[in-house]
Amino acid sequence: MTERILGIETSCDETGVAIYDGEQGLLAERLFSQIELHKIYGGVIPELASRDHVTKLLPLIDEVLQDAKLRLSDLTAISYTQGPGLVGALMVGATTAKSLGLALDIPVMGVHHMEGHLLAPLLEDNPPQFPFVALLVSGGHTQLILAKALGEYELLGDTLDDAAGEAFDKTAKILSLPYPGGPEISKLAQSGNPERFVFPLPMVNRPGCDFSFSGLKTFTATLVNTFDPLTDQDRADVAAGFEMAVAKTLSKKCERALKQAGCSQLVIAGGVSANRKLREVLSVMVKKQRASLFYARPSLCTDNGAMIAFAGFLRRALMSKQPELDIHVKPRWPLDLLKTVSAESNAS
Ligand code: KG4
Ligand code: ZN
Image (cartoon, rainbow, N blue to C red; front, side, top):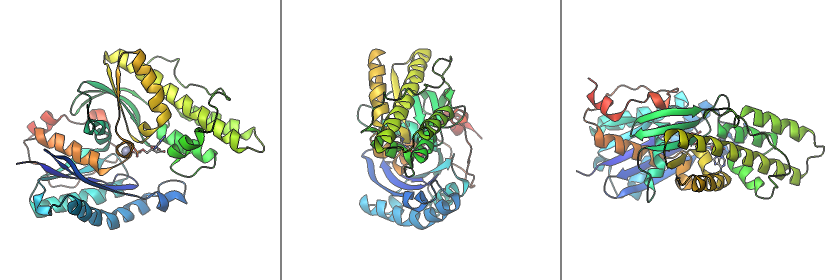
């Protein structure tokens, strides 16, 4: 029987729902972004996020079923984001998924949010093949991963402080731009000169694949304070310089990771992978390395239900054991500690 998986994402400030069909691919997807709710606070308020997921999740599930012209009884399994993320927000997705699974008597799988991001580019045409190097850049993570097979992920590099998305969001605040800052900085940078200010490229001269972004944020704050008044052109030039510094730093580390792993495929995933400057800089780098670059369409880079449905589908295809019914979310969950699918299905 064809698998039809309902995917549920509620790890942070987006309620994402999708249905993935094993033969036809993505049948339907819906997303509700809570940005307007959190914007006035300049960041995500966890309690508000959980409450909003509660009100939006069931209506969104009804909508994807209608879009796909399916009934609940047509679903063969459910996958939900088990972690990492905000605990209350995760609980909304987990309890809804488990209750529906119990009522429908179908399996329910907890999916790792970052594995969802990592696999999203595989939803596009001409997908990468394992093994590949993946740069995961989101609001909470900046990691270089060697993806050897589904569920087999070796950590090559990590951030020592802020994540890349976090650095974008904090720098946006310094420039008085609204939350989330990544897309705003990117927009402002288009009218800026990236070469007017010499930004540092953190950690590029140190060996290894680790990152550090907090210095860039401090550099930006200090730079901005030297202007009085700060004109629109100054702000645009700062945004462009910052964006270029992040892109060049990430590119240098990706180049190193590709060489270290002996890989010729680079996958970028997570919210920051939607950044056009980053894609541009990485395209030039991979060309020089005779490697290929893979990424998903922008709507699949930021949080969404499709990546969770798809990750659930890939795991389901290889899983023999029925998952347990207990509800157990994992707010902190390192990707390299994820059990491989074969280890999971052999566990007693
Ligand atoms: O993956 P994601 O949607 O959520 C997390 O799992 O964190 O990533 C959100 C992050 C935010 O920090 C946001 O500012 C950043 O991704 N982001 C961008 C862009 N779009 C989203 N950063 C730079 N350029 C963009 N175009
Ligand atoms: Zn995410």
